[in-house]
Each structure stands twice: as C-alpha cells, then as structure tokens.
Amino acid sequence: MFGILLWGLAATGYAAEAVYSASGSLPMLEPGVERRAINVPNIDTEHFEVGVYVGVLSVEDFGSNMLTGAHVAVHATEDFFLEGSIGSATVTDESFRTTGFGPFGTGTTVLDFYNLVLGYNLFPGQIFLGRSRTWTSAAYVVAGVGNSHISNDDYFTYVLGMGLRALPTDWLSLRVEARGHEMETNLLGRQKMSHNFEANFSIGVFF
Image 1 (cartoon, one colour):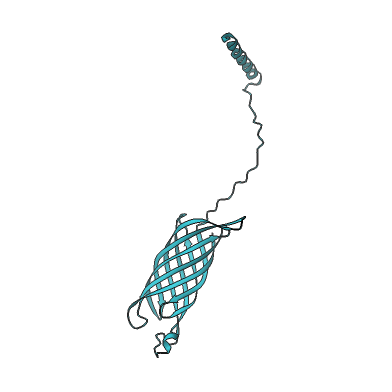
Image 2 (cartoon, one colour; image 1 turned 90 degrees about the vertical axis):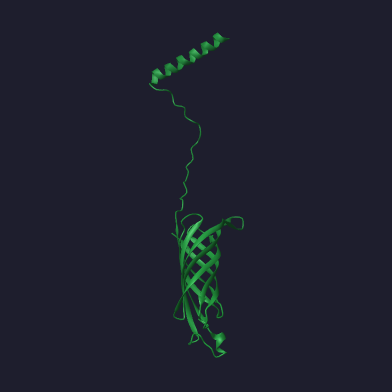
C-alpha cells in the first residue's frame, strides 16, 4: 500500500514537470465565478451647515413676537458641532402703556442678538416615514454665550437649548429647536435677570 502511494506521488511530480517544461510556467487555475460590476457609493464629507429660521421669541415682561434669523455651523465630528447664529424680533411695551409707563418711548423696539454655542448630538438615529423612506436624524443640546441688543443697550447673554435635526437628503437639513436666553437687564428701571424663550423652525443646507 505504501509503495502504491509513493508511485502516485512520483507520477504526479513527473506530470507537473512535463507541463512546466512545455509551457515554461506553471498552469493558472481560472475560477469559475462570474464577476459583477460594483458601484462604489460616494461618501459625503460635508462639514458646514448654513440655514435660516423663523419662530417666536418670548421676552419676559414684554410678550411674544415673531423671530427671524440665520445660523452657520461647523460639524467637527459626528458628536460635536460649533454654531454661530443671529436673530431679530420686534418687542412692544403695550402692556405697560395702560399704566402710563412706556420703557421704549415709541411703543416698540427691536431686539437683535448674536451668539456662539457648542452643540452635542445626543441621540443620532433615523426617522421612519412609512415602509420605504427614512431620514437621518439627531436630537442635540447646545450651550453658549452671546450678546443681546435692545433699547440702545447691550446685554451679555447665556444660551441653553435643545433641538431635533432631520436630513431628508445628504445636503438638506430641517430643524426644530427651543432655546433659553438668560440676561441681566434694567429695562424696567431696575436690574433683574430676564428669562427669554425662543422656539424656531429652520431649513439649511450642508456643503
């Protein structure tokens, strides 16, 4: 039995040597697998987001009014982003006119603000719209500082907020957001901490 095995190995070696001698190289084994054409998807590398928003700004003691503004964000990582925003709203002192006191003189004034916040994406995920459509989404929080200008005075402002961002496409963003603006003012003739609330909806683009 052992002799038969040795004879088989020797025969195999002679056959391989004969093929190598005839062709000058070892034979190539061609796989019988059909190759498919593969399209490699483009990987998005957009880090900048620019958008505009509209909403409502509630100023303590002076009611709520329409707010408009714009924002620019830099998404440094998947978790953190840095954002600067500006906004403007008309503020009225109508509620004080019945008492004969009008802090704004003409009855209305404009509140302009700008701020810089650091954002953190808490819950990145997806929003499912039916069975065949999904949007990338993220719930996030922001915190930062800024400046509020009202009635010819500037006030240092602390900003805290949270929001939800959804991306119908890889370049379009929709956001719903709520922010609190905390500032110490003297609009009523005495120093007090003013707690102002903002709610807005924004649309933006990534590039």
